[in-house]
Image 1 (cartoon, rainbow, N blue to C red):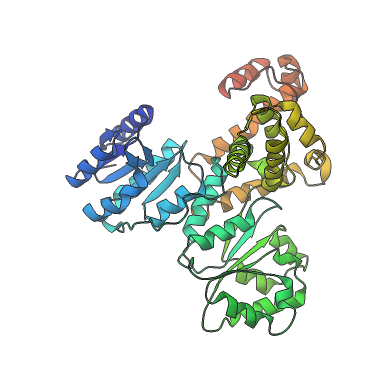
Image 2: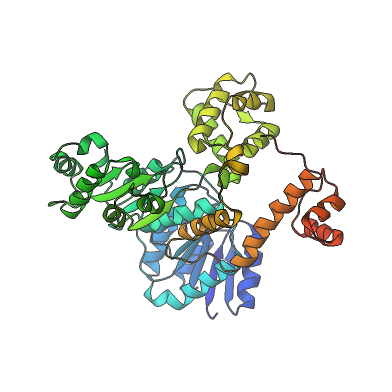
Length: 454
């Protein structure tokens, strides 16, 4: 790479790592922990690319983007952030940052994006302000890679006219995603209408819907549940929208490819709705977000007047180990109940066990529930992972990363099953004991692990 990179981050370790990596790649680097210093460098004409954190001691990196665009039109800015809500991705996209990566980021991936930014800098668009008085957060919380990837795709499709199909299990937040696409799009001042089956029962129903939506956003929930006759009316409505073309969004708990093959969904309707497909992961597929979501719901309850509560470490671990068949909606209800019934500021493990003990567990489905082969299950999850990246490829090094993510839980579960006995575990896995020890060290796996509470 050839060029000068300006790095702004209040974390000294990140500044050091980026400085070393970029210097080795052939770049000149100026690094600072101050936005004031960064803006001075930009004003002096220094730098070909900016890499900036969002939350800095002396300001917000996103709020500096319009000023950078004004002073240096075409200067690419790559935003990195530990913020775990969808708003960071949306604000970065609205302010026309060149790119956005959540922390912790993959260094080789950031290096490749920096190289592309250096190559593209003469054509980079000027940024525009995203400040318009809208709320600064949404109840779409998640710091895991799968959720951050979803946020980036939402930000990319938000201001297009493409129909969007939002797929996911019940309770994952499909309707929230749909509402976010509307509320932060160019159509936000126009109506947002949710179509029910009753709205399509008579021949004039589609026309009345179009009159209500007036070019805004029309959401059709659970598209696979609509009878064939109503699906046909939707097709006709999408083909003849009248004077004001609305944005069409649809949700489904059912994989529409399967539903289409089974004859539950008309092919012509599926093809019209699937301009872009967003897959919302189940809560059990983003376990690291569970404590974050629980904290969010407890803070929400406190803001509404409830007493301040927090989960004990043991309670949080039980939450992580539960399978949450009802996903985020079930988690919110459980947290709300605990916030009201807990006897102390810290919610105990026994209180969590009491609340979850009366609720269904997904474990039978996970272990034996259906006849899907392991290979088919893995393929389904990998396809979903690729889908979440939209038109972009996942970060490089996918083969090694996937193997590591499969290997670590496999060894961990085998250790649990053998009571931490490494000789038995090695025999179970069919590998040498020394190999097992090396993998335990390299993968940072706990040797003494208790069986998970289900």
